[in-house]
Length: 219
Image (cartoon, rainbow, N blue to C red):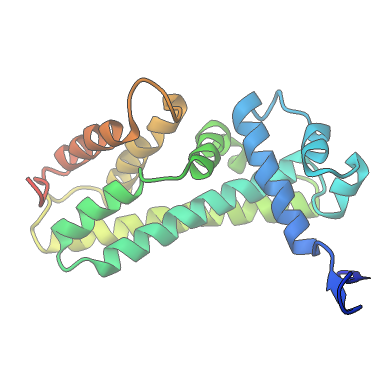
């Protein structure tokens, strides 16, 4: 439980940083450092320094650097899925939902881009079993989030095929191709670069729509 300290006014206790907020700070700083320096080249101790805690204190929250990585991957995938479900449920037609989903996948904050950059670089580790119980649980959660995202997209695309909006194709393979085109952006795009994100968004979405042979509703 969080500890308390006297307040300077009125003598009322105030809560210090909670365990949850400290954990969130570790994740946030790890995302910045992993995306900037690369996961393999980054140091776990640098995360502790950025948060303002000792290196040993990290182990109260995460068993290892890879444990933290799996949590970051799971959060990135969960956010992607939540945004996909939000925009597709709000749209009035399949065509509009598809267009909105493509655009939503590229309208990210700098922090979300950094997290996606880690995902595309380190996603392969999700397939590597871990001996540690906590690491393995985090890995399995990340793998499950990936499967949920692919399943949600596949189910959505089947609906478009049944409505004869898009041609019939293997829905899982098509989902992976569309997601792959989206995530490929984060291999090379950096905020503040020569190409604005809005231009990248228009270019990628046009290619995704071409992949499923659908014209943009706004065209």
